[in-house]
Image (cartoon, rainbow, N blue to C red):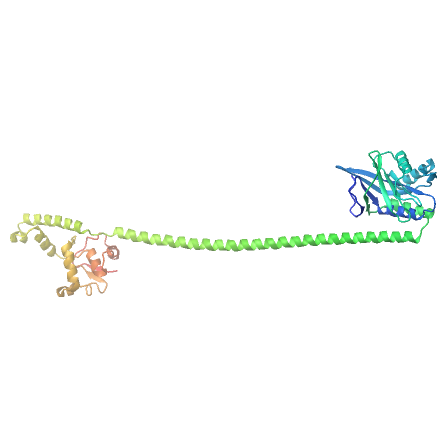
Length: 409
């Protein structure tokens, strides 16, 4: 399983170099405790951990350290005996079963963090693999320097990370090693400081979680409000659209009704007979000729003895038609003009005026009347012929007779 990067970390120095070095907090505390025990002889410890690689980046995780039982000096050279190696392997197997020795730590009284020739030589001999680590720490000021074996050289690193997580293996080793190293108040202070730092980290993590939750709630509320606003706007727009559609339907209905009324009026006008003066005169001339011929051929016709022409015979025959005999009545332009003059002021026609004939809703047909003339007398125009026919049940507007009573609508 690939190791994940620690979440709770503290950066020390410039960490732009590679590989990235992560040291667990208990290991760092243990190395500081060793520095406080230095008297005259150097003290060393083996570093235990693992390496990892992610894409183009390499990582070194140090989660354990075991103190060297003996670190000897031969003049100015450091010597790690076989016995020291044997004890280190036993401690590593006991407390860090899966761990690997990745380097070592050394602190010497009166020495700086500078890398001497003897330290580099010993490291290359003891840890020839790539990315092994050497930590040199000054015991009084606790200044430290990390070196990494790469490119066949021990190169200094600009910084590293200290990370915080559960580390029961290192805790157990530190407890068992206290009897040998002893416990001082300064160590207790270091442990309390580490605990306080861990508590601070946990508190910050909780606050971060709460802020993240608050942001999620705020974002959800904002989205809900936005959805409600959009729904409201959509509802208002739909209402306006429905109102406009309703108004459009009302306008269309009114237009259709108006068209139907105009169509009905047009059909009514088409169905009413319209007298063309020329046509009427032509028909009257033809009828006059026919009636004249009939009078001339009939020796008993009184008009034949008087020698009147065809038009005079026609007028006479129209005037003497017996009552009760239906006869088509047609008038010419001269008769219409005469009727108009009679209706406007002639004292002789007072008995036939519309004020008396038809005033009570009943019109009595007179000589020379047609339905068009009756409509003209009663209404002032000839557009009511169909209404008179419908009121009186007439199928032919030309079939009326003198003395016939017509209901005037």
